[in-house]
Figure 1: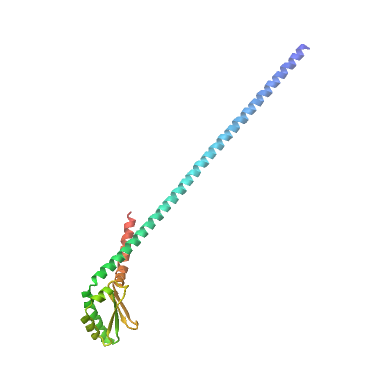
Figure 2: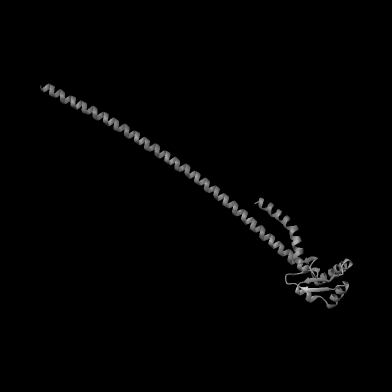
Length: 204
């Protein structure tokens, strides 16, 4: 009886140890599998974060380059506009200063004389206030006598130099003002200046 009881106890111990060992092995394998899964998940998450960071960095870099390029274009366009404005101003100033009273008195008689060949209508000549004051009275009288209809001289505030000439009804109009001549010069010079600026910008 004692032998059977001992055998039973030994069997229970053996079965318990085997069961515990199997359970321990199972738990260990599950723990290792879970640890591996966590490691793999962490690696994948880290890789995703790195890839997303690279994509964000590339996107930010492209956006920064695009913004820089646009800012550069805007700067060049602004600089070009300022240069062209300065050129126009210089042209007006230079042309206005070249229209001395002697130049005007040398040009007007020939224009009126040529006009009188085919026309007898009176003319209106618009000058700057300053130039009109400087014209000699005898010159004005002689100018009027050249054309049967007479010549009327008036001041115009918008004219800085030179003159505009037309028939009294305004049907024929010629603009020899500093502004008009400067505009014609600028129209010729601006494309060349723009080309120079363009080549200069390409070399930056």
